[in-house]
Image (cartoon, rainbow, N blue to C red; front, side):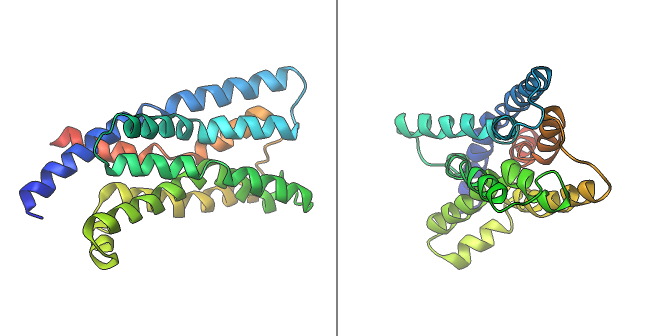
Length: 212
């Protein structure tokens, strides 16, 4: 692939990422409003309430981004990194539900230090899925793992995604160690929103688009 063709392709991909970035804030707002509402109704520690709050605060944008990918598929648009990214996020949606339920059944204190990983998966399991999906897209596009990985380590959106995946759990663990606990649905929403840095990779794509 020539440098000119690759540059044009990257522009198209970042244009698609600008479509994805606008889906993040609605999820934050829905999760926060839902948390405040449940607290006011006396459901501060309701497991179902926490599931709903974390799903919208941590994965609300994934639902909308998945809709974007389905729309692209139905419109017969040419496959792009952004579309692969959206599919990956959609497929990662249910993973935290299983982890949350399994942890509660196993007796894990979901409000203590040992439960720090639960909001992490609500906030970023879709991001992990998106990163894997993006890697598979590059592998398929480049015709092999070696060239695909080379593109991956030079792709700013994929690198931003990887950084988010690695940094967030350390922050969540530190917050629990120093005493934070999601004892209300509002705190649950705040914790998940702060951990949900899924907007950073699309923002990087949008920023590159603006620079060009």
